[in-house]
Length: 213
Image (cartoon, rainbow, N blue to C red):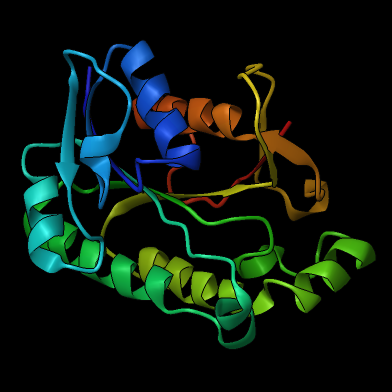
């Protein structure tokens, strides 16, 4: 079994990944600014408070782990919708530099539907809503993806579809052919199952699968 570092572990896909990895028998280091407040206890779980934009925090989090799962989230508010963010690119630059210098080398990075070359390929209605809402935020996810792709790391970039809550079904698809990409839903808990499977098997190394139900 591996030891996973989950960055952004306090909520959403990150928290679901912590749960799924523990269920699969892995050791997990949950990294977030509020990690100590995660309402979950397990003998294989370590909670570490840290800021993804602070290099010393990231280096401390990387110590002794085998795989990093990076799940960052930016606040969706009028400011970020209008002007965008640099959270994703800045945090990923810090992480990649630290991993290239001292390891580990395996990175699974979560971006999203509409990032990179998936933008504009998912239907007119989705493209319109995307452009009118979160396009500025995703501009930085595009930079984030390029940092990962240009790195010397052993990487996978997962692009979840339209996120939903709910218990995991295990019925997810990871699609690498752009002709198959669709703006379809996926439960956060099912994205977590995919991430843990990818940490275990590495079937999508060097690829950017769209993950949908």
